[in-house]
Length: 509
Ligand code: FAD
Ligand code: DLZ
Ligand code: SF4
Image (cartoon, rainbow, N blue to C red; front, side, top):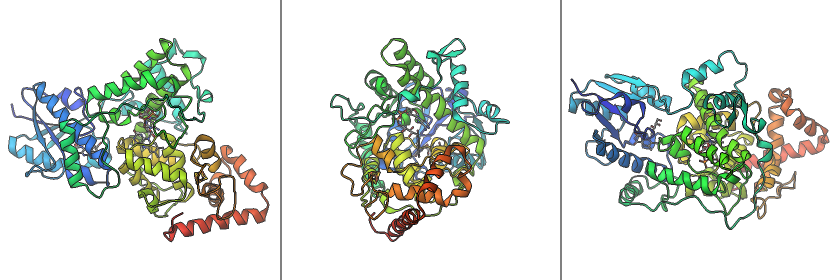
């Protein structure tokens, strides 16, 4: 029987991934490749490139140890054809294979590239999710609004997680009202597990350093896990040290504590080093054993079987044009401060600085600092999307785009969110310690020293009045704006325009 090629991509590092499950170890050959096309379609953070390459190398070694024949291409191999399709063609010629067994990629871009191959491609659905694409489509069918909360309840019922018969554990589906408290410095809060680079990782770090010297982001120190065993240790560390307070401090931000009680496992889940259902069952077990309270465990499980599954459903339901949507017509260029240029805004300085050093920021930093500012300032959502896809260790388009284009920028016109996530500086002040020591005054509402979020918040509401004033969830905001006297409103808008002009002119703001 003729050999077939079994494609394993950098985010498909699961021994039971669909393509491997469908293949025959005796007959088929696994193809894995570090290629410039994947490493450069956006300017990825160097830590992200290193994470993918190192994890791919270790996974290939594991497959070989388990008896697979693996054709692995390193980035600097002389024959490297440069892209996944070109590598498949090269390997097909080498082996005489005419067929490819693949697991559907998590980006429309690469799905289209594989479909264009002059080989027979058997594309298997990626079944490492709780809801299949068909299941999500069936859920979405005929609904006017695709709200995450309703989908999440379906997933609770389907998995039985935190269920007591047909009822949610504790009597409520959602314990968010117990969550979202600000945090203060806690010297006893342990940081996430840190992994010393082994020789495989060191070799990859040298490669990335040499080949991607100008990408935004610091490569070293590199502390991520790069295999399933390390990811498992990172998970156990989170369950033992952080889960209990996860919910309470989920939305808090601190300058000196970049991780707080977050799990720091998103990339491991997205690459297939951890299994989402297993992670949730383990978290549930902590609650059942009395080691973590329900508000935290429910909040954590909701992020995974709710948000994570939901955004994937949306990405595939909405189609390949989703990342290019721009419902609010925003077209301002991304200012250099997103790439580390000086800014006087302490919150952006810390969120971007942390992103540059860690390739990690937690959800509220992404949503309410960098995302909030982008939306208020009217930045081009396509550029914002590319930025998020580039700079985070966990960014693959199926999860990044609905979060950025949908949840954060409202550029999908309200598919993901029922209202835009916008706030003035008061929210950031309440949830963080950024405002203390900022060059701007979070309490000032007008004038050059006023917090830019305060100015831009009203500017945003005013310029999108026609779209949002009838939205019942925004009526109160418009009432507050309308109650301000006309002169003050003119001053706020003029100050906001002046701020945007300074930013557009390239002045540090
Ligand atoms: P925790 O806060 O500890 O949460 C636990 C897990 O829940 C995460 O590991 C993740 O798998 C899941 N999760 C939490 N929130 C979400 C969410 N909104 N969507 C999907 N899964 C979620 N997440 C990515 O995995 N990749 C991305 O590219 C990405 N881009 C984002 C862009 C924007 C603008 C925003 C607002 C959010 C984005 N997120 C993305 C979601 C979220 O910010 C990250 O999943 C989270 O910060 C990862 O850190 P953690 O593992 O410590 O998560
Ligand atoms: C993110 C990434 C990077 C940086 N490099 C590679 C690579 O060289 N080879 C590979 O197979 N995968 C890589 N990946 C992950 C892919 O970009 C990811 O599989 C697609 O975006 C589809 O989800
Ligand atoms: Fe950010 Fe405004 Fe606070 Fe400064 S004052 S840190 S700009 S929210």
